[in-house]
Length: 221
Image (tube, rainbow, N blue to C red; front, side, top):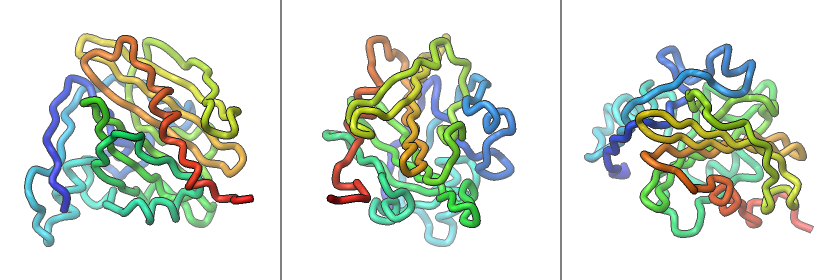
């Protein structure tokens, strides 16, 4: 298993998973944007996991629910989401995961795929789900938004025509930034979020733009 560093920050990205599983709340699913502010602790492994307790300890540290998320390879992630993102240049990949409970094979909805990476001393969480409705909240970021939603158009995605929304939360403990975008051609929902003590002047859209990968295009002329 990978070794990861325990990171404590004032605000963080809350996993989609709840104590009953990794599904979203009814309010989140209806609106596409969760409402509740939260401050918590980001934890990850600092030692080799015991193979007998791996799913209960390692995955539980990340999402708070044993067995809900499982580690996967990037290659497996590509089989689940056709037009998958990549880590930005210079980023350190922390790992790929999936949550089967958030998918529905009978409706051609894939599991939620998650990529965690570190860039410029900040930890980002990116998610994607193929077959999700455009208003589905896959980000799992519970915050009281100070700014947003702001409509944006991503230049690198969808031949420069992919629409998205940006959000920012500012409180006494720091900032949370979130960007979501949706591929109407295939039906893929994307999100990227980051939390830090100070994000003044930071542009999360610029990071999302870097995550486009021409190599992951499903249709090659």
